[in-house]
Length: 191
Image (cartoon, rainbow, N blue to C red; front, side, top):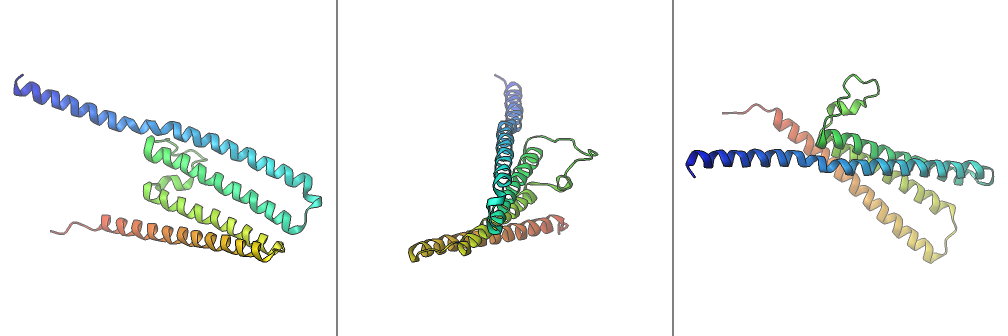
C-alpha cells in the first residue's frame, strides 16, 4: 500500500469517527422521551392530589389545606424542572428546535447553554428544597411529638437544612464560576 492510499484511508477513518461521535448525541433522544413520560406521570399525580384536596377540603383544617397546596406547588416546580431539562437539554445537546419567532418560545431558551442550564437547574433544586423544608417546619409545629419522635424530626430537619444550604452554596459557586469563565472569554488576547 502506498503512502497516498494510507493517508486517504486514515482520512476516511477520521471522517467516519467524527460523524459517529457527532451522531452519538442522538442516543440522548430516548432519555428526553422518558422525561416526557415522567412529565405525564407528574400531571397525573397533580390531578390526583388536586382531586383528593377538592373532595376532602371541608374535612381539613387550614394547616392541612396549606400543606396540600404546598404539595401541589412542589409537583409544579418539579414539572417545571422537567420541562427545562427536556427542552433545554435537547436544544443544547441533541439538536436545535428551531423555535425562533414562535409565539410560545420560552424566553430563557434564547440565551441557554450548558452553564446557564446548570445554574437554572440548581436554582430549581433550591426552590424544591425550600418547599420541602417549609412542609417539614409546618409538620413539626402541627404535631405533638414524644421526646424520641421530636429528636428524630429535629435530626431530619437538620439534615434537610444542611442539604438545602449545600444546594445554595453549589448554585452560588456555579454562578460565580460561570461569570468568571464568561469574563475570561471576553478578555482580548494579550501579546
